[in-house]
Amino acid sequence: MTLDSFRPLADRMMEPVVSGAKRLGMTPNVATGLALVMAAGGAGAFYGAGEERLLYLVGAFLVFCNGVFDLLDGGLARELDAESRAGDMFDHVLDRYADILIVGGLAAGIERYALGFLAVTGVLMTSYLGTQAQAVDLDRVYGGVLGRADRLALTGVVAVVAAFVEATAFGFGPVGWLLVVFAVVGHVTALQRFYSALRGLS
Image 1 (spheres, one colour):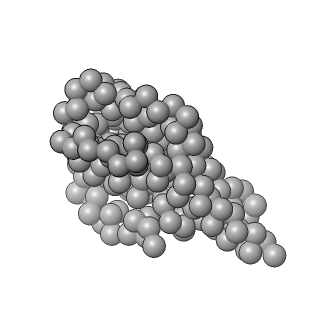
Image 2: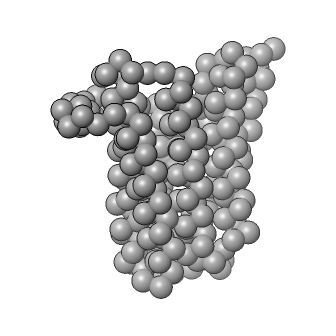
């Protein structure tokens, strides 16, 4: 089970935020754009944390904000009756760029580029398999070990730990091990979703 299964609860908790954003005149696409800005800021903080570890706290906060705006765009679209295929595509494209920025910032901050490559491909394949199922007329797949909500939550928690802990195990610190998880579990989740989709098509 992943945190994505708690999406209905998160949407209910976001209702006051959605109402406030609606009163301010914010549109779903603006919220989506702000989510990407938060991700870019978080990536920059993670990169800088290689020199100043407390920047991991800034990165954790901005990743949290990315998650909030990611929930907000969908809530606004429903509240304003503005859901559309174009908006859904815009959201997913910017989410993927956000994922690349966040994972890339983490990897660059500790100079683990090969590991970062494996992690970001795991993340992207997980998301791709989730939406590709919909492209072949199945329901969008959110299952598997590690969904986007899980990745954001893990990133935030590990970033807070990394701000204060430098200890390494087998050559990896907290952020290094996070990238290992993204690399390994991300591809496992992608394969789970692939298998689930194939079963649905058989």
